[in-house]
Length: 111
Length: 110
Image (tube, rainbow over all chains, first blue to last red):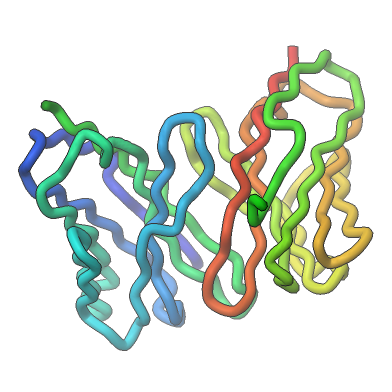
């Protein structure tokens, strides 16, 4: 079946690195995504990784993919208070193109 | 010039009423979706349309009826609203790899 799991909460201090983890079950997913949801707002596509890659870096964001363990992580370097949000991991299920989301990780950044 | 726009942003209504949420995308995408986000922030797909045709219908009560008059619009009509329908409803559109979401409609049934 299709399932995506994330821890629910992470608290860090401003300037520290944040690491948000995700596990998924559908090994046929071509892409894996990270979306960000700020309070009262919609979902913003933050970054993504193609399934044949194991790392992707985009400015302060680093995505690591361990396809064997079906584990995805998002590292945010030099975390800022503006990074406080809910972060959703997602995979595309089967061949339908629908996104299967994790439960979301609430990132709290303390000044 | 918002890419995916939903109206209204907030909707408060009484149990038993019928209401509609509208969604429009100006990205030229072929595929559109409705997702429901519950009070625990869990996001679940409800429907997907490709070029005005229904391609995904997850286990959703038949009180929910999507309608796609053209490929730029996907509206969601809900009959006989129940308390449990209170949630944030997100419209999204996709072309190829990436899906883009609207700002959401917060529906509160009282």
